Length: 131
Image 1 (tube, rainbow, N blue to C red):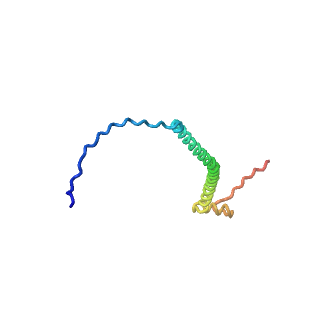
Image 2 (spheres, helix red, strand yellow; image 1 turned 45 degrees about the vertical axis):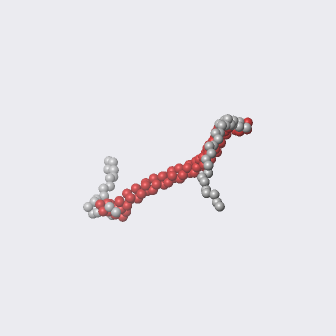
Image 3 (cartoon, rainbow, N blue to C red; image 1 turned 45 degrees about the horizontal axis):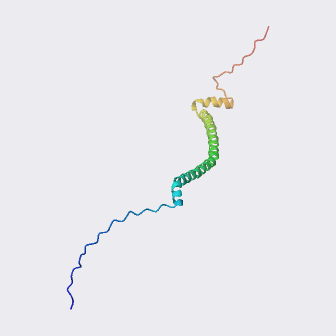
């Protein structure tokens, strides 16, 4: 009926002779030219990108300069207003201290009302008549 299964026979593989090295195809003249100019293209692209970035940054700075000058002017105005307020505050504080100082109360009453204490006598200097 059926023949018994036999393992496949192993035949010795024929020795292949080494192939001669294949010659690589020469790159086409266009590919060779592109390969030679690739660094130039990369450098040009980098320079172009850097130029665009430089122009953009200079444009941004040129727009910021007037803003910075306006802020400096505003700061100067505020500093002048602060100095004026400081002087006014000093003057008002001195006036307040004078009006509410208990040691100067009698002098202020005398100054504003003309009141003189009875112990004080008014001295009026006159010229002596000529003889």
